[in-house]
Amino acid sequence: MITVTDLSLAFGERALFKDVNLKFTPGNCYGIIGANGAGKSTFLKILSGEAEHDKGEISVGKGERIAVLSQDHFAFEEYPVLETVVMGFPKLYKIQKEREAIYAKEDFSEADGLRAAELEADFAELGGWEAEAQASQLLSGLGLDEADHPKLMSELDESRKVRVLLAQALFGSPDILLLDEPTNGLDLESISWLEEFLMDFPNTVIVVSHDRHFLNAVCTHICDIDFGRIALYSGNYDFWYQMSQMLQRQARDQQKRNEEKARELREFIQRFASNAAKSRQATSRKKVLEKLDLDNVYVTSRKFPYAGFKPEREIGNNVLRIEKLNFSFEGTPVLKDFSLTVNRNEKIAFVGIEHTSKSAVFDIVCGDVKAESGEYYWGQTTAFSYFPKENSRFFNSTMSITEWLKQYSPDEDETYVRSFLGRMLFSGDEALKPVNVLSGGEKVRCMLAKMMLSGANVLVFDDPTNHLDLEAITALNEGLVAFPGVILFNSHDYEFINSIANRIIEIVPAGSDGAAGAPGAVIDRMMPFDDYLKDESVKELRAAAYRNAQKVRI
Picture 1 (cartoon, helix red, strand yellow):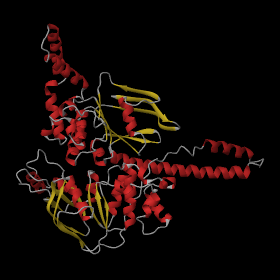
Picture 2 (cartoon, one colour):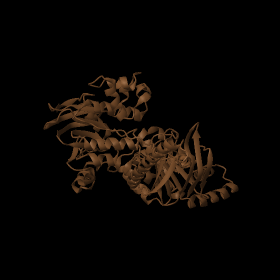
Picture 3 (cartoon, one colour):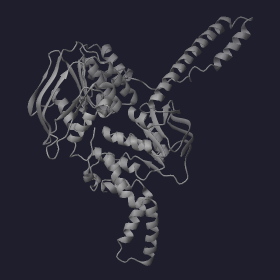
Picture 4 (cartoon, helix red, strand yellow):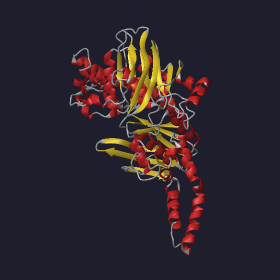
């Protein structure tokens, strides 16, 4: 259990937290949500002791261990993967290293023997004999091949390091588990495994995440950071959202009533302040007006962008035909004889572990790279707009955001351009910032404004939800559901895929014996994502395609 009492923290004049009181109890999972900059990660750091606070107290149950998902992906470069995971339980790891050091001695003394006996008892009590097996099980569940387990951390790429650090946090069943964006870098199958792990976890979990499906699956409570307060709600993210919408409506209604009452009081005071017969009543109403609090009726500090994509022309029946594309990335084939026909009214989600293959399809048909062989044909009525995964090349300029967006606008009128920036929350001086200093989330919002201006009837997105907060993800999600044209996209956001796609395409990897085909073979189904995952024929096809892989992945 962890208790927060009268917690306050301010940076200059800005109060990040003020008089926060919360209790986190075992058996529950608490989702921490709030707008970007609200202090979600800072709150976790305060709970873990990594960051200081101005006032208040953090109390942890006696003898309870806190485990934290490390954000430093290069802190364990010299250590083997399995050892890095075991380091998540410092007490056990310390005993293990001391035990190994004693047994490595050439002149093993009687004192060493006594100490070794003590260590053996402690080692067994803490589960030391099962530690390596448990670490290996965690890594496999998170999608790390057994071949990677004996490697040094320095030999792994970024996505695999993230998985090791997550396994490190989960290792040894900590009493309190603090997770900041644990689904980043995970494929959908690993996220599903993590959801099941946390649902069965008997102790306290506190998690920051922008993944709505994940928050719905694991959270028993939601902690909403807004205006420096942290309000605790029972239930998952969807329940919080419905409740918050109701409370905001009530707050707005109350504010409207207060403003109307204040207007009536002011009119009375102004009319009768100099009237001797009414002066006492005017004085009385003035006191009521002074007590009427118009500034502390909180609605929300959250800002929702507006994502509305309106095609300039209706799309025809012939949208896109791809014939036998072949492409290699850094010498490795990622597409082999890839063919596809896209029809009108289709919103296609590309899923699977072959991330490079999916990006290659998008890059080729949108003209960013050239295939080694094969052809593709866009229909005469189509006009596409592309959101590439790597967008930094668009922002190598000192132009202001307004000047930058003007390049892509059919109307050079600044008011017209600024209206689209306003929809993406760039207003006033914000629209004058140089584009080369923008954050990842700001760049994404600029790209979305560019796509809204395009009037395209085909939208292509390569993992667009990266760097976006929950409000922006929700806005984009709703905009794409409402879009009347064709969409090709991939994403790691389960809810995003399931709510938008009506067709699922999974590019499967090559098997070592060639049985699964080369990258570019596909499983193709006209159905929502939930149905795709439950479909027995799909399960059989996937099992066959991945039979040479350690574990099936989405």
